[in-house]
Image 1: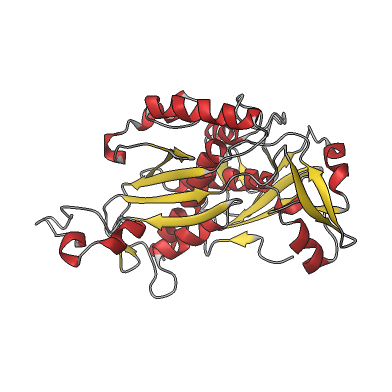
Image 2 (image 1 turned 90 degrees about the horizontal axis):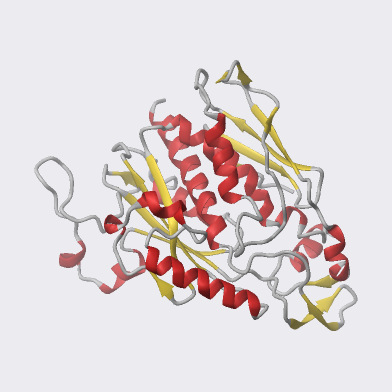
Length: 351
């Protein structure tokens, strides 16, 4: 299986399966001499881990990171940083009923057809549990670029949207509720709706908005390595992501140029920021902001028609521990992938 490495100079390779002994990764290209804040790394893992609230999967994992290399006396050495995250709460029997059945909208069918074998225990490598390794790498990437601030938050669940621009939100409130929504009124509605959806044995999707501030001018490598193109690739590589838009996004397609152009101020900033902080694929010093759309989790606790390995249509029903809405736990993953991109392009700009 190829495609397990992300990045150019700051690279991360992940390994492991949902129900294997451990997940892990190797970070290559991290500069030497960075004094790591291990508590900050573990904090990011706590934000992503399962079992953290009543509206997420109840799988209980400590997600404690064990570093194996690349760090000496608390500082990076410039050599590859190896780490593992042990799996401690697998319940593989929860998946025995799908050993010979392909779950609708999962990777089961295509993995079997492509590789001739699949790990049916939680989806194996296709499980969103793989993203734990990305969060470790992203937490270190944030420490490579400490002056750049990255904040992601839940901006919608189903038909419930925050109706305020991000400039009017208090990012310090993102962690004040289980949904990770900085607008308290919207957060309560979202949480109540997710609980209702869970009782129905169903799932629901939503969006995560990310804002990157204090970005220097000049990050991005035209023509094919535009900054927004790499951000798009990073976000679309996350499990369950179905869409990515930055700046004005699809709304910009409805506008006229006279409405959409970001006019300059004398100091080089712009009066508006419909460009989303990126012009010509290069950061322009304004806030970078984008939105990521997540589909409903594919495993539902309702009976559905499916296909088995013998070519027969059968009835199946989800079992085990699953998120009714992946969005709250996806917030730190979006931040991590954004940090990997920005750190990578920051280092490329210094070459």
